[in-house]
Image (tube, rainbow, N blue to C red; front, side, top):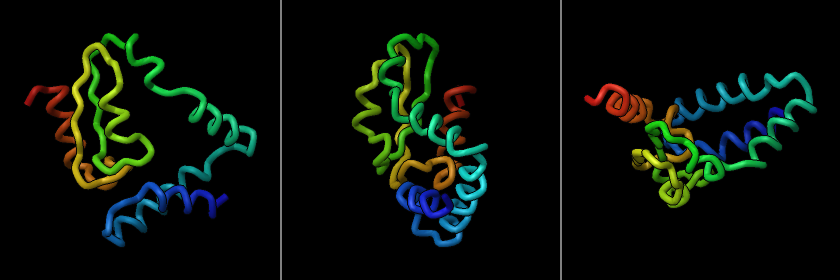
Length: 119
């Protein structure tokens, strides 16, 4: 439903930049409307709420980067700090919500580059 998609998009978007908000909502409208049918959408929804990364974190031995938004209400900072990855680095992106990749792409890219390349 375009209405549900718009409500969810609005709840996740924290930027005050109106042009960026419009672009984010348009992206969500394009991509979240792409489910084959209601059954597939329902399966995706159940998968997203049935499990949590905390269940699997202790078994992930590879170095892991956690990019966390300071104002994320979906995956809050405190919950991310509580994850028990054996080898993880946590980078907090200040003043944004869940959509760090849209709202602070340079900060996210810098964190990834630093993690992967070491500089």
